Image 1 (cartoon, rainbow, N blue to C red):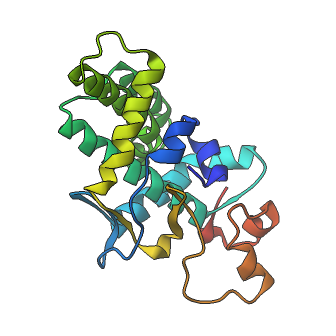
Image 2: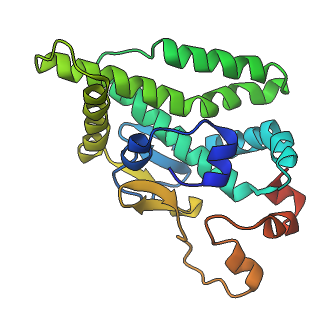
Length: 231
């Protein structure tokens, strides 16, 4: 998954196979008020906006400690990506009749401990968004095992389990479309939901052009008004 500055600073790295294959489908125009449509689920724009604000509050001190502010748009993109990932994982888990296991529960417990030091109003979104990758990895492993068991594998290797799970996630969008509002600046590139310039307008000024790159420098981020950056 892209958006490295936000994802690397905000959540543990996900397996390469997940980052390359989990979010496949199509990114197009979602309905008004809808940030993303993921199979039978919808993620509202208001949900994304609220979670973005809460994540900014929760992570501002971390970004400051790293010595660089982060554009709010980067946080918003990361929130859209992670909420979409969580929705896909939850729907796949339901289809395979599995529930998140101990690995995911441990991650949630750790996030909950951290969230206890945050303002009460941001805690739920912090836990939900930050645990999305752990949820996806846990579900991927479980559905991989379930798929192989149904195919008669008694003692699959860890590699076989991971590959089977990746296959499930990778083929799921063929029957369950993923659609993201272009205003969030993400689109599918080589099967990955990644930051991209999806604006209809053309950037002219140097500052506007700086805002379109996938990893703007600290100078650009710090030049933004306080309500458009975190940290």
